[in-house]
Image 1 (cartoon, rainbow, N blue to C red):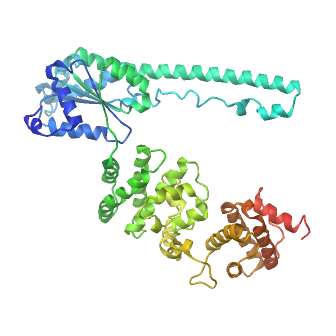
Image 2: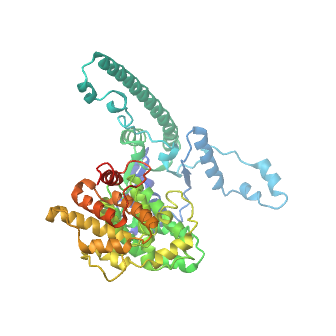
Image 3: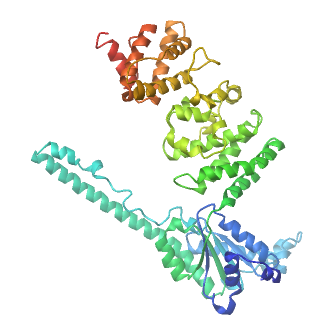
Length: 540
């Protein structure tokens, strides 16, 4: 270790790794050093900083081996041999670069490399240890079991009937279920054994390097993937690892953001400068939002950042890249990722491009999303960019064909400022601006809730009636199309049973104004079903 490093105040990680590599008094002999932590926590970055600050000018050979896909002994040895050959600066290796005569002479004198060529003070770094196999070895033994309700008859069905045949059928189903469970357990055990064997190949070789060659071995591994049981038996048992867990901190998101940005080439130099200047503000704000997720996954964060930069690259020549537009684009992409993980991507196609995101999340009752994004300082100002743009990368849509039109609608949307404060407004018609169908639905839902809680009656607000009439097309054919869309969207935002009397009054009012008695539907829809029954089956 360099003398300069000794004078530096070291943190616990640096001090422990330095002591391990210096092997003071033989305390750390026959040991390995494990750096663990979840993906993206900065394990490799942490080690690289240490090596740069402490071993940059050292003559100790350092061999870095990526374990990705190396699941046989020969593959690992071949990778190590390639590393040894690459770092061999002997004359024989240099002679191959002499014009004309170098290659033939090198082929005659070329050395054969093996583990015996490793010096005793060598340092080996095995990175991505968990990726030796794409599968982990931690099994959730109950996750894949066939549930009673899926294979066997439910207890409710049995209570309904005392017929003996039903019990016999149920007993047969239970036998089948037990058979499926046994097959699944056997398959799980067989798979676990195979994965263990692949990991054991590498750990055996690491053990040889430590015990036979006297090498220092540093292992970088997300042990959560391969399980604490294996970690305890192999890393702490067989390899006797000193263990340091890298916990994500405030710098992690910043590092991921900057790494992704550094690898992105934009058409315009100003775009890179804008995103770089926005880094601190965006990452600081996003960190607060991200920490309020129920599950924290740094891999998904990298996907969001990468999707963001690729999407900026797509729109940089079309969109006015203001700070709020860039923040809107980022949080819309993040929202798609969050909702996708929750399997709640429905209704986003109904959000108006350019509309206030908070308004539309509220309108369509997406409370989890509101709760999460309310932690952002910029939530009130974020505009929706459209699902085709926000989801094009994460959902593998491909670039929107109508990109120019989409950006135009986003930037020219006329109601954003009004929607920002609409929750505080009391409807008056005529109002200060031209309302849309979305705003009518918002006031309708608000009025329905108020009617249910306070008035306990069927009264329809006159201002809401007037707004409805003003939005309704004049031609009867267009009225039908408009009303069908309105009722379809109403069914997405309103629980019919919350105030059905109020809804029936609206049905009567709609019928009175439009004369529509029946709507064609592709399938069951409770709004249309009740409307059609009201004016046909009941003879009203």
